Image (tube, rainbow, N blue to C red; front, side, top):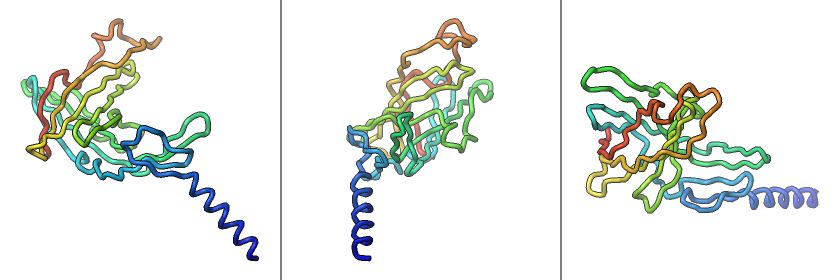
Length: 191
């Protein structure tokens, strides 16, 4: 019985030794079964509704944290990660028309904005990948914390990602694909 208990403890120890926990800011990916965890507790700051106006359009962003989200790869490798994702709505202030709205999204896989990287608790790089109907058009943007006002963030550094024209894309040029995110810098305020 003691041998069986020792063997069980050894197997359990070996399993937990393999499952490492790393901070989100880590430059390395965790081992299979590991965890990229928000050890520094930076994600709760973003988890809220933020509004701002630019070019006669009102933008509403909502960010949500999914803790311990399973990330899998085709090679049977997997790990868990605390993931910050977002959704947004755009209203034309001149016409009152809603131009874009995915605020009803609740399923993780339906969020189109995700946190890619952060540095020194100041600048956070996000990616947005649109739906197939908009040819999976993809951009990056940065959100900066305002050091003098914790209820404001700055939207900046809009940049298109590399584009691969899909076979069934209804648009001839990338510039014809609707892009509802702003291309210029502006301030968002916590609601």
